[in-house]
Image (tube, rainbow, N blue to C red):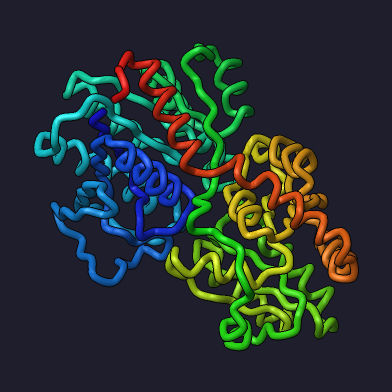
Length: 410
């Protein structure tokens, strides 16, 4: 199959959409398929070009057998609704303009969270007279309303109309959660064309091993119980409450926090940490994807927090699967929903109420003194991690697409 994938996040960016697309595409290429990814120059989330890249109208490179075409866009940091929307729309326009120069394809896939990339993919599919597949990673624009980035009104109604158009016009919708599938079905979308393909993890990359003692020493973590948050520092994650929990444990010299990544809230979080005099917390800048397993391997607990919003009952954070692969116990702070049900059924961690610093600090202190429970979570992770191997999930996604567009696999 000849696949054209439209996404504004791609390797070497390290956020969840970039990782999922890269790892799926790599598997598809290994299986003998031709994959072209149309994307931007890497800059997420700081809005700064990665080393070795320029914001040009056309750049071509090959990564792991994937043909990657990068187009020029308006680049901004992942903060501020208007600027981010300009970023999204500029990519959609540039992608459509570049599409006549792209190789022939059998299917066009567009992905969210924001759906201007998917809208661009839909238009390109029409121009090329081939099927369009929508990969649904987030219920946008509902999510931007929930986190307070934009209030309900005319703009939201227009975005919701576009959202429904994309669902209805797609030959297939690939949803990352069962909750999203139920939501779409309740809104009148044919459930027969919706396939659930969870997030997962590249088990070849995230492999447990000895703790990196040099890295632990570099970060001041030697001999300490390490609680880590690794990911985007965004409006959705409730990270200010994590800082409040760290403040409650600041006198525990045996417990250390690390927060790895970047995002819209990073500067505010750093300022707040200084106000609280958090000597037990270290901020680490966004790291290359290749370094993430070693950083996660330093952690005795992997934090997976989100704000206490109804929308987040339906999400399934990718951090869960990476932590399982590294045998790192998970401490989530999530609204009750699909993710908490998964944690409980797999026995790889536990959940506390979201945005509750006292509950979070209490759970950290309790687990730091309970190696038996932590070892049970590690053993369970070792048992179930293979179920979320990205290679199997990539094949599941491709099979679902081929079935719905009537394409014969090689």
